[in-house]
Length: 592
Image (cartoon, rainbow, N blue to C red; front, top):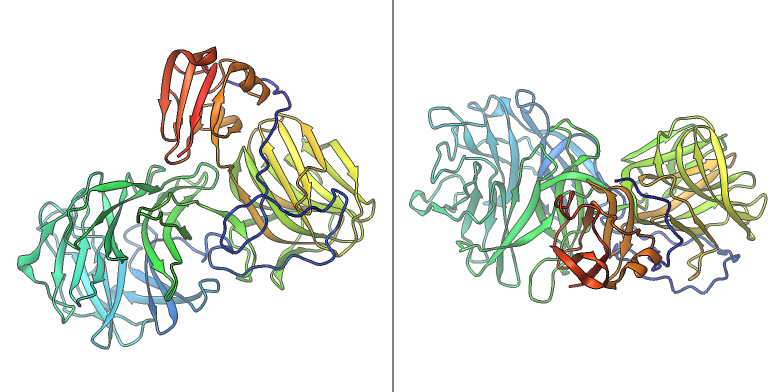
């Protein structure tokens, strides 16, 4: 269905203050709506805040280690199998700036490898750097290939074949010999976890790291396992992670189990990472990193850019990994943010002007219409950035954008901007070269001073906040554009931007159309009768898809006052059952 124009609805304020840990909090600053910052907000150069992908190029299946104070990421070079014949690596001392090391392993140094080299797993032992890898993508025991091991005296290679043949070259317990992960337990015993075609094995590796305890093969396949095994240990517990779904499709995802032994058993606990319809699809094949001396954890993984249908187009990303007090893992919050601390603007597409990263900010010179967009598709969102306008024109945030173009206002979407020359804040929309101002307000805006500008869009209600004020300086009701990309815009002004962040609110989100399309409206936990749904902007018999936070439960009723047929949803649902489509007249939302 297509939504009708929605009424102005009350909205929980979800704007955030920039903070290095990536968490969101309600603004506490009591600045008046017309107030200004006397100085720019400081950028917190914290791992995971400088944007994804964190390196350029098509890569997948990352694994990593910390060697002598340097973090090393070893991914698959993602390409058609006959071209995927080498491995690159990336190193960093701070998890922010990354250096590429080309062809650390090449098939020319592996006599039996001909194609499809992938999923490297590194380890250091015996004063040697080892790299376990898969090659040739064998489909039966008559083919040459499987899991190999290479070694080097340097983490950046070159790595050379250590044994002149596959370490595991046959199917055992039904497991295709791919997607290996090396793990050394606290007692010094090394294990190799691996397997494709829906089977997972573990086998002990001898202390020389290049031979197996052939009597120790054990199948440990957990429920839902497809490939991409990973083992790590925290507080005495063994965590097995794996990927489910198809690696080229949107349903690729990461699940995990917890055990008291490295040999299992591994009962599935749940899924913690999957596609995000606003950011990326096919998120999977991960590794996990603990920063030494802390309980800070990150998950490194690959994902497909939105709208890209080439299965080999995968990019490397990482986000925070957070544990509950009982050791279980919170669902991963895939992020859209950029502090530009890494001195680049990976993932940004620019229009109408040249954009550069300078002194940790994203800067554009004065131009008639300069835009920079992230490949995202947000409907309901909280979006914020630090904006430094020039003396003329205006600068600010664009959202729900499509058809960005290059000319003045040659895009469809909304814009919230601040202007030093006219001392005002403006909210409007553009489409087909036509600009429509929705509302504006006077505010003291000084040139070359940084202001924190935030937008909250929930259904048709659009709110603009200045300098973390608790009440919006602008509000408008408009449902012309239901979803689209987020970005930055400068109009006849020099401008600088920093601390960009977009996120979905924490509530359940209801969409007018299937596949999370049409206008979306977020509701927090509670019971909503028909009149309360109407007050929130949701008409009667409206809702074709919904997104449910992990651990939450949504009970949809066909009649008012929680009567009639009830449907229960505990996970994102891209299309509700036919008998529930456009039938919601009341709803109960139960939070975790």
